[in-house]
Amino acid sequence: MTRLTLGALALVTANLTLSSAMAATDNMQHMDHSRMPGMDHSRMQPAAPAESRTPIPALTDADRAAVFVSPNGHSVHDSGLNYYLLADKLEWQDADNGSALAWDISGWIGGDIDRLWLRSEGERSDSKTEEAQIQALWGHAISPWWDVVTGIRQDFKPGAPQTWAAFGVQGMALYNFETEATAFIGEGGQTAARLKGEYDILLTNRLILQPTAELDFHSKDDPRRGIGSGLSSSEAGLRLRYEIRREFAPYIGVTWNRTYGKTADYASDDGEDRSETRLVLGVRLWF
Image (cartoon, rainbow, N blue to C red):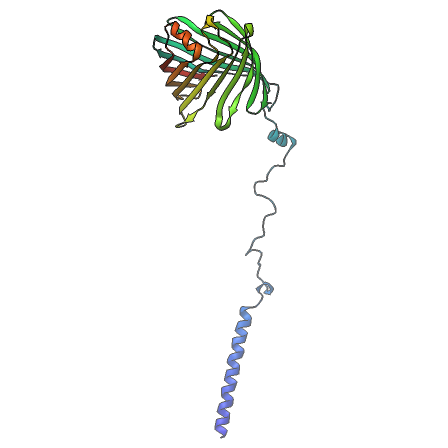
C-alpha cells in the first residue's frame, strides 16, 4: 500500500514538472523582443523616407501659363489670316466628240468666322473653252460645319459673258457629306440654282472612292446659251484616287452627263448628245 502511494506521488510530480517546462518554453516564444536589451529593431525595418530621392521642382507661374497658352499664339476665333486652296478636279476626259480638259478649283482666305471664298470651274475641248466661270463669295460661319455665302458669279462661256448675284449655304451634312447649295440672280430676270455634293469612302487609309453629283436649274429659257427652264443638266461621277501624299492624289473615274427638257433640245440642234459617259484621269491637289 505504501509503495503504491509513493509511486503515484512520483508520477504526479513528474507530470507537474513537464507542464511547467512546456509553459516556460511557450512564454519565451511569445516574449516581447522589443524589451530585450541589446537589440535595435530600427535596423530590421527602416523608416519611410521623408522626401523623394529626386526632388520634384516646385511649379512656377511660367509652368502654369505654358499649359494653357500655345507658344505660337494661335487660338480659336483669333485674328490670324489663313488660307486654303483645293484643286478638287484637274482632269482629262474622254468625250464622244474628242478629249476635254476640265477643272474644279476652290479656296478661301480669312479667319475662323469670316472668309473670302473663290470658286472656278470649266471645260476646254479641242483647244477651245466651252464653259468657264468664277465666283467670289463672302462666307460667314453659322456653325462649326456650315457657312452662308454671298457674292457674285461671272460666266465667260458659253455665249456672251454674264454676271450673277449669288447666295447660298455650304458645309458638311451628316456622315461627312460635303454639300453646296447656291442660288443665282442674273440679268433680265433669269434665276438659277446649283446643288453639289460629294462623299469620300475610305477603302484604305490612302485609297479613296469619291461619288459626286451636281444638278443645275434655271427659271427661263435662254436660247443664246443653250439653256432651258427647269432641270437643265446633271452630272454624276465616281472617282477612285490614291493619296501618295495627303496633298497629292492621282485618280481615275467615270462621269455620266445628261441634259433635260429644252436644254436637251438645244444640244440636239447643235449636234450634241443628250447624255454622255466619259472616262476621266486626273489629279487632286491642295495647299
